[in-house]
View 1 (cartoon, rainbow, N blue to C red):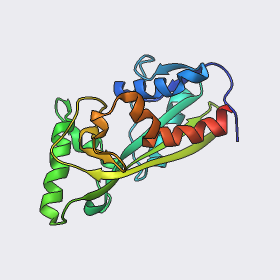
View 2: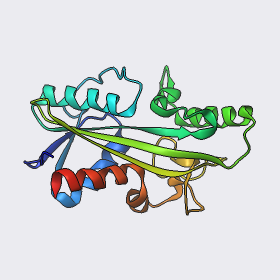
View 3: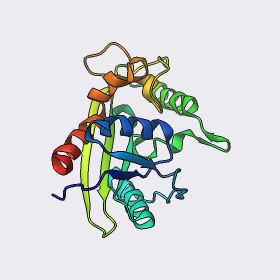
View 4: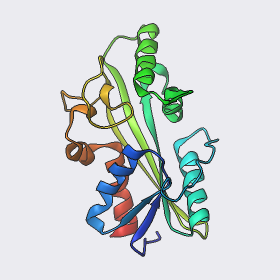
Length: 202
């Protein structure tokens, strides 16, 4: 497995919440994080139907455009009663003509759960696939998950995305009610990052 050298890593995301979370996770390793928006990179079309495919598109596009190693994250929530939806379309459910509206997306998920007739608790998981790509075309892939359930109503003001309706196993609170440092210890992204660190940093 290829090790990361140098002290600068481009993170191929325009999502400020995700960028901050990744920067926090990388801080102990002395890595300077640069976001895609900071480099004025366009968002490539995510045309794959799985997390690893879309993460590869973003990582390789960013590495080619900047000449830096690039880390991308494709992540989402899979809800068992909805046959794994929204999955790779997690962010798409939030799209509006005025930008992303995750309260709308979470309401859509809840409405579909009610319509499904499946009783609560609604098993779900957050999935994250990290891809670290180099300008020469090489990449390494690191998947991560955290199991839990969808809860209603929305709870909490921390986090981002669907965090207010996701309650991880072993907890009575949602991701959005957790202190960010606590969430970063158990999240799907933390799981994937532990694999990334073991593979490319240690």
